[in-house]
Image 1 (cartoon, rainbow, N blue to C red):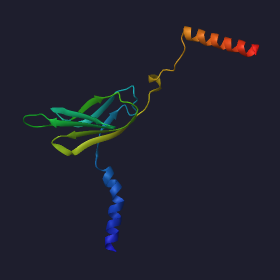
Image 2: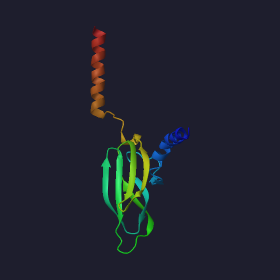
Image 3: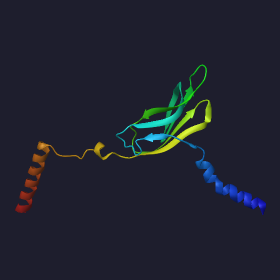
Length: 144
């Protein structure tokens, strides 16, 4: 009986454990980015942090940093800008090379900007051809 309870508790806690893999959230600005706007990511870094790699695989963006200080690393707030990105859902992960267990992450949904896709319109010549074509069609239909 005791084994069943332990197994049930472990099974119920698996989704919580999976979600808790990244307890350190990134700050994302703007909160609802579009494919026309770059994204500013606020993360915890160090006074002399350096971004060593930026890797984009599918919809996962991994940024690796490391402290480049000679004597000591002092934690500070840092920002970086990425994008604009195509519409979709992205997982952004910032990992410190020396402390990979303290990764910071956020899920970002990039929407399509309606202003980025212009509505097609006809210029003067196109409009004249359309009118001429419709007039010819009307004449043909009327003479039939």
